Amino acid sequence: MPKKREIEAYNNSVNIPVYNSASYYFDDREQVIEGLHKKSIPVGRYGRYNNPTWVHVENRLSQLSRAEDTLIFSSGMAAHFTTFIALLKAGDHVIFPAECYRQVRNIFHKILPKYGVIAHEVSIVDPEEFVNQVESLSKKHNVRLIHLEMPSSPHMYLIDLCKVKDALKKETIITMDSSFAPPPNFYALDWGVDLAIFSGTKYLNGHGDIIVGVVSGKKELIEEINWYRDTTGPVPDGQVAYLLNRSLHTLNLRIKEINEKGLKVANFLQSRPEIKSVLYTGLETHPHYALAKKYLNGHGGVITFALDLNEEQTSNFVDSLKEPFMASNFGAPQTLIEQSTFFTYYEYSEKELDDIGVSYGTVRLALGYIDDTDAIIADISKALSSLAGEVNDVKNPTTV
Ligand SMILES: *Cc1c(COP(=O)(O)O)cnc(C)c1O
Image 1 (cartoon, rainbow, N blue to C red):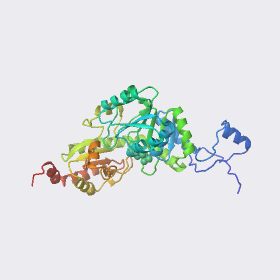
Image 2 (cartoon, rainbow, N blue to C red; image 1 turned 120 degrees about the vertical axis):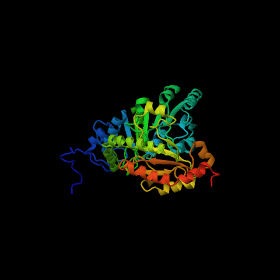
Image 3 (cartoon, helix red, strand yellow; image 1 turned 90 degrees about the vertical axis):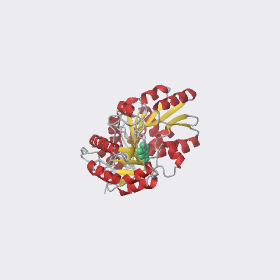
């Protein structure tokens, strides 16, 4: 067997090959100098820095978000963390939403302060109050970065991005966790966001079979983040990049399907008297519906609803469902359901739950695009009907 692999005589396969290589070879010393150091010819060096399958999917993701450049990561959290650690330093002020993804909140609460970053948490429940707070913090401090997330989970809250941007100094970097609303439902970068960050695990991959993260946006910022990715190594392997690339072929089809299904099921849930409230940005009753009309092109498949029940009664309701898997994720092919106080907020006290507006009756439904909505509706309908007595008990505790 020859020591060096010959490059294939034909490398014009329609699909991008999966590159799984820890290193890339050079023909001679000249190529090392030109390729590695002068960068005058495109050659790879080592798998933590280079992978042609990554580059292919990164280019497609840039097109998707209308971004100057993109990087992929080993997870959505790695994408967030690498971005923050690359762009922030001791003494910097940063603003983040109280309602953002719990582990992102942990980065601001528990990790970055260890390195001298001063993090300000502001609630987005009232969009105008959020803008006011951002404006006053921005006047008082040199805010290096503001991190946003919309829609947020589980309430699907939105942010008036244009007003937030006006309230900030020009040099403040705006990052946005867009996992719940990727293109084509929402184009964060078109609204002046500098970096759109995604858990690619969710809608972008859409098959529930890989963990991956994405950062798309301004080239100069991406270059800084790239140095941190090269150095600290939160990279996916070639197979993950390949699967993400394959998933992008069907992104528009999947999102179109899930938007239709989401609206249909949200309307059904709202029509049921046993359900106290439904939070879905496509419903006029959503507190931020006006913002949804301004910023979103579609509303996805995640619907949060609250039953007028205690924790155990709510669990009985969720347990009795036959169709959805009890699992955390969204954007997957299968429909998933979770009772919020048993998943994300298990360790929260009653007071903490009150503060964040999550009740024991809160349930998050993440519709899958392969499921028949009529079957999901029938399943939920049956479970609700068998609860009717209990709902009454809670509303009228003195009733026998
Ligand atoms: C899932 C998720 C993340 C984390 O992404 P991973 O790919 O699981 O690391 C971050 N933000 C939001 C909004 C998410 O839903």
